[in-house]
Image (cartoon, rainbow, N blue to C red; front, side, top):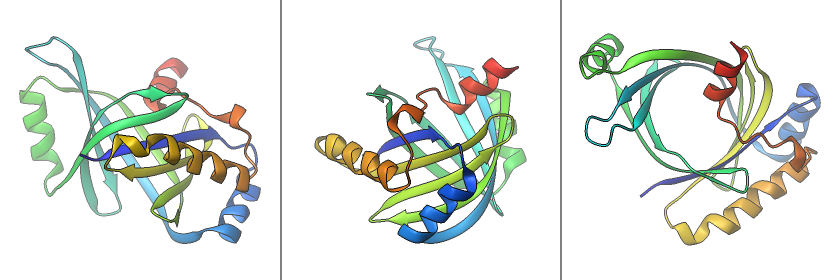
Length: 176
């Protein structure tokens, strides 16, 4: 089981943060991600369910997350897979009752350190953020992983008070 442990924080000075990332971590790539969020209702539990379709370069990735928060840190069970045909996927999801409800676009820089991904992003309609995440396979590692993520915040000079525990989708919906 893959568990995503992630901190997202507001960035006040994009250029300064970018330089600190370049100075301290391995640059991987620049990116441009376009997301379509689909919402449906589970016919058994009647719970709201969400699926994300992401265009990242020439690839399409479907993501489902079973979301939770622990001390303003996201701890999610995450399932992802690639698809070849965006329109076919959207057609099937529509037939299953899922409807598009919001889009998100972000551009930025990806860095890596010891299996921790660091994304410095500009999210259209919201602003600048740093996302620091690690995928783990054992719940026993959550606390030590959170400490690793907090330590990276210190290195790039971002105060813990800048941590944002709302999801991007929630912030985008609130802004409309």
